[in-house]
Image (cartoon, rainbow, N blue to C red; front, side, top):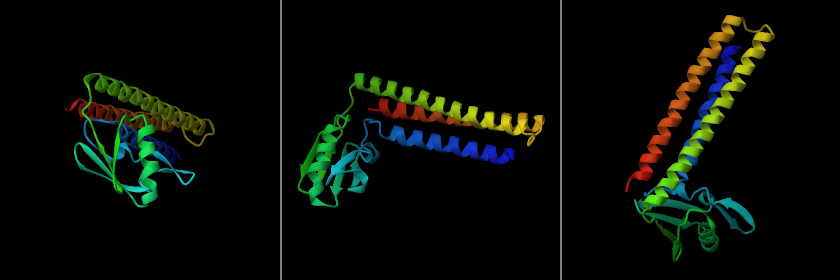
Length: 185
């Protein structure tokens, strides 16, 4: 029973780290990336839709994102969504295509983005600690209900802690990688 509990907790930890990677992909670096805009919500025919469901998004080079809507009527709403976003990007409409030139980041903006990355990293660490707490509570409940012995519970808690430590290290690694991307000119 403790293995099921550990497996379930491990899946939650893994999902949390995966979500963290996806979350950081939306933070702008000096390099163009489709992940930067694919999450944007576009008001298309009265329905809020993610941009990646309305158009193909590509980064033909390191300084440009190319968006090609599948419907010509989506060009205007996509342009508005990009302008309203907090990304600070200016879309350039060229017929059916939308081009976004990624300007270089100022040093001040790089520092702000690094603070955002560290803040989100700390929020993710808190989530991991909460998942650990929930897992330990579940193990203690199993011990109390006499499903696990005291020794089995302690061993399971130690395994859980090792797993959490590994995921915490992974979060730190992801943060360091993202900060290096932001510092890159």
